[in-house]
Image (tube, rainbow, N blue to C red):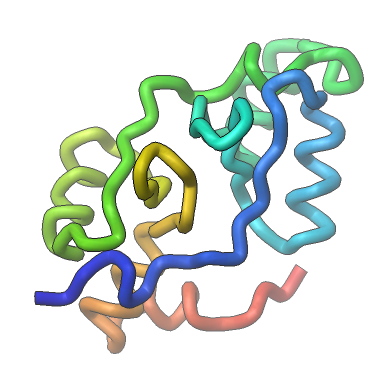
Length: 138
């Protein structure tokens, strides 16, 4: 059995729910990532993606300079443990139609596993794995 902890990402970027969409977008740009885990202290309260900022923020005419992450954050975040089976994590992603799962231990964020991480681990010859393993080009 392959566990989530064997391939989760531990280079995490977190932000507070009171930070703005602009701050999150800049952090994503500067860190070459597509999501930020929104926390309240050590507790995961949501995830916001570059797509959330675009589709739920900008496209709805929300001011990115004043709109707070907690206004758009995907709530009711599904989490996994580093000891959970990778197949179970993939099943959760499929069931809840999500592409990322925070990895928590004793309620504290310790990692993040994405659909791309699973593809690299489970199907290394797939197109998604190939794309996910490459360095960002933008």
